[in-house]
Image (tube, rainbow, N blue to C red):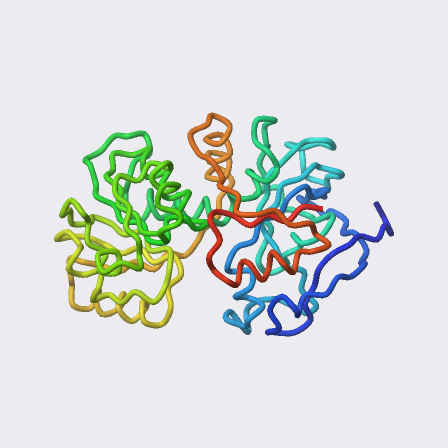
Length: 329
């Protein structure tokens, strides 16, 4: 692989959206210690990708310009660095790359061995690539923040999932139903049947008065809300929460952090919990195995060639994807 050029996409400044992405030929990376070189078969986009480009995490991310975005990948092992004993050339894997370095919108990428898991033949590259950020976020929100046991044990909990047809939301509905939960979900009218098919017990069109008010059609109060969208104030959630209900915000902004602090300071039983994703290989492996067993599925909104990846980028920015947007070489 040494010296081989590959096709990749980069941006060299903040802003610019899809038009800011440039197609380039750059040297393929080489795996260092504890790294694996992958020939990529699928990359899925997450909102965090274009938010980094927009400058919403400056000065921390990206680490440097030009930046090659994309973190959620599936591919085939081409070469392993020293210290890698659990993978070999030819293995099919799913991996999460770091947001600092990216690398997913390219023909090849290096992944750390600690966030790479085996991908069985029953799981397609596109299905696997959808899982890292969105799937682990949904899993962490439900199991750690909401305290739901996905083996079905524990007391029944009433859960609300907003933007349930999106990347995180569609996984959250399916995972929640593995636990002892009653799931109310919100989405656009066109996706109501899809979200019901994923297991939601009640589905609200977010554009109706009932949907905007987030009221459960059966009158339930929510023990936890997996909040996968933005611009819904605490005042809308609060009357719908159980006595100790909590809103788990997966994309907390300034207003959410202010509410979080205020609720803590006033010892409120109702809490807002900002979620900080902590990716772990065992969680990713668990999700891949659920897909293999047919207990979890990746809904694919659309597939785009790497040569047209800016179309996928624009679709992600638009914010109305159903499930995951996939880029393939």
